[in-house]
Length: 241
Image (cartoon, rainbow, N blue to C red):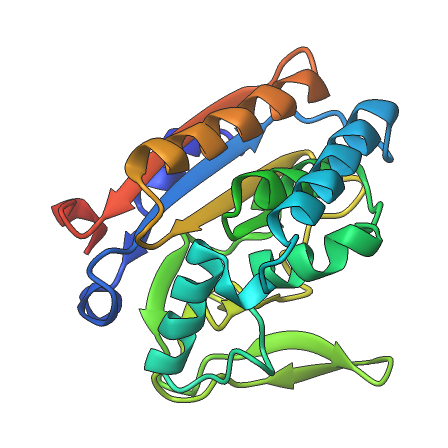
């Protein structure tokens, strides 16, 4: 993508989302110039650190009691989702981490590890497969979502009022940060990526920025010509509405 700054400038978060959770903030990071590759030793070491961090966090504490995860469970209930059935992405990874996180590819390994280490929902998508800029909205229920079930590709539709990320072609991630679609998913040959870091209270702006900075440090090693742009959107950002 030629204009990653313009792509991020056009991203929006609907006022109805901020009405649901005024404390919501998101950092969007667009990256171009990635050299594709499978997993490597650096990514594996990062995942090992994330696995150990999750073990320490959950010693004597239930995963659903961790502060940021508990806040996301409340947000899910607020728009009608059942968090015990559809877990936000950081909860799902934190639960899985003590037994071993998946090794997928260099990009996925980095963002999964950073998500667990910083306890923030973090999605990664193929920027070149987007149709228009990203938008976070409460769904009408008519937006198509391409996914898979029982080994077959299918199209689903979100529930009315569900919080979803979408572009001009349909939903890219359901239930805020639960499940990503197939169309825009990162693949081993992806050369441009969009990362989405979602935050609610009690996560502070400083903690969110630290997670974004950590992610960008690791992404910069994925090619000599990496270009990165980032943007923070919150309820106080009029351009985000």
